[in-house]
Image 1 (cartoon, chains in turn yellow, blue):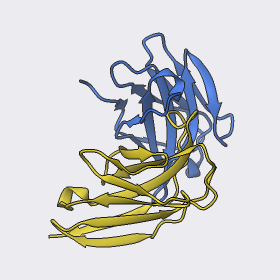
Image 2 (cartoon, chains in turn green, orange):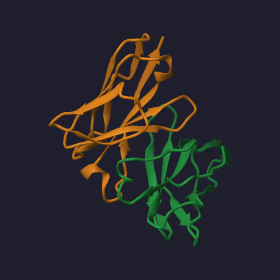
Image 3 (cartoon, rainbow over the protein chains, first blue to last red):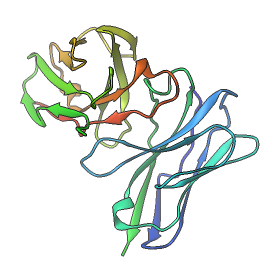
Length: 112
Length: 115
């Protein structure tokens, strides 16, 4: 499994954009990059995933570096509900729906 | 549309006892994975069940076992409980043994405390 490096914590203000970085320099060519988040007292929640090009959905955007050694999760307007631990998880296409290797993630604090 | 449900939500046991945790997958899903999350850490993969068989297993001892029923629900059994087994146990479901890069859907877990 590819190793990831994420900041332990980040802080943002409500209604401002948030950029959460992730380094995954040992990623293989067929690994997708998944992001999950875990709100307090809840199980992890899928956010977004991508392979090479940038991806957008209703929750967030994912920007993937051209060399794929890093990615950034973008929350366009942070809300208090976005306060959570965010996990960046490179995972092979074949197994990403069944086995996720979580690191320690980034604790995001959103200030009102 | 019912999501992943787990029971019980909290459980207290003593060392040496055995415990069974239960999981019902999201409607339409046929694959169940179990994770252990110690306090302050990310979840760790225990094993996955598909077609009533264990398909993948993480680095956990044989004290951890499971079962999947024909209705796709699943149980996690832990024997000879140790203090270190205290954790949040998470169940996740997906479709088709996880192939095809599908997101996993997690329940809110069972908090197991060992005294």
